[in-house]
Image (cartoon, rainbow, N blue to C red; front, side, top):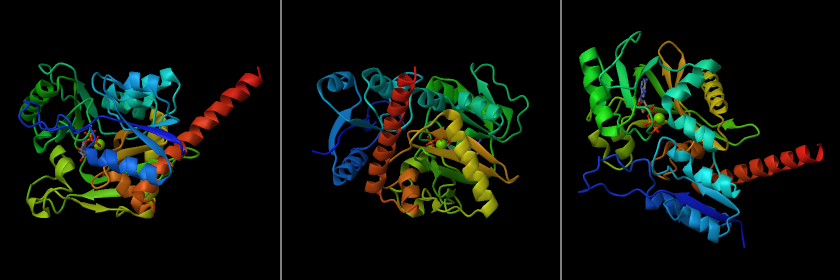
Length: 349
Ligand SMILES: Nc1ncnc2c1ncn2[C@@H]1O[C@H](COP(=O)(O)OP(=O)(O)OP(=O)(O)O)[C@@H](O)[C@H]1O
Ligand SMILES: [Mg+2]
């Protein structure tokens, strides 16, 4: 039998008639994505077990054996939810794909991530963190600004109204976002420029794949002018005439020098957060030529149809199934290397 791979995930459910916000499950994965990953791994000769990352997870790993875990679980609760499955796996000593507890916790906190960027000299938009919605500060910031929940992904809480042009709009948006998402709100200067995202794969060294540019010029019918939740959720599902399908350019339309700068900056962000195996780094290339890093996504979406990361890999010559197997390969290589380093260290004592 082939390598035993457990695929850990949180399943996307419908929010209809539940009273939950439309975007409640947006971070989670669809049955189609889970099946596509499993099919890809099986085609690569692996034995795959599907393990939903709910309260039964610990029990599953205590009663079953896996050589490695393919982890796409976003976690259920709490400020470090993306780290929960890796924490359990570290505790049990089971290797897994993707970044560890620390990188997943830090990257889920956009402000903390930006502080580390600041220390590392990585450009990131100027910001303020609003901890109390009744005390909104825009001191030192230039409008337009954008508001976002400090610890979400998949565009949750990001709509066209999140871009605010004056203090009154800012106060209204901060209050609304804090009420819905019950967390601190990040306010950033809104960068006018090119929307880019860089897929990074591997470890020795990590490689930046071709840069993807997301171009919203054909979204006039909807008025969406940046990567809002609505565009992220519907970009590949609805007819183009609704204006929710931006153009993807991969490689991005950049000069050689811009491409080099963007890739180097993305790799620096990857290293600064302590990512391994794979990540997607979101960048706005400002009109001033500065690659402002918005965030790092160590658990990038792997939907075979509408996620950026598999699309980027395809542009780099890796089809979906090959990408899934490659992710396992790089994780195993890293794990084996760290094991042999630990042995070397022990024998030299
Ligand atoms: N400071 C900014 N300037 C310009 N656009 C921004 C800024 N911050 C966010 N955006 C826009 O909003 C989108 C979503 O922002 P961000 O990447 O921070 O959110 P997210 O929910 O974590 O996204 P993801 O789906 O990548 O997890 C960006 O891709 C970009 O289009
Ligand atoms: Mg993003």
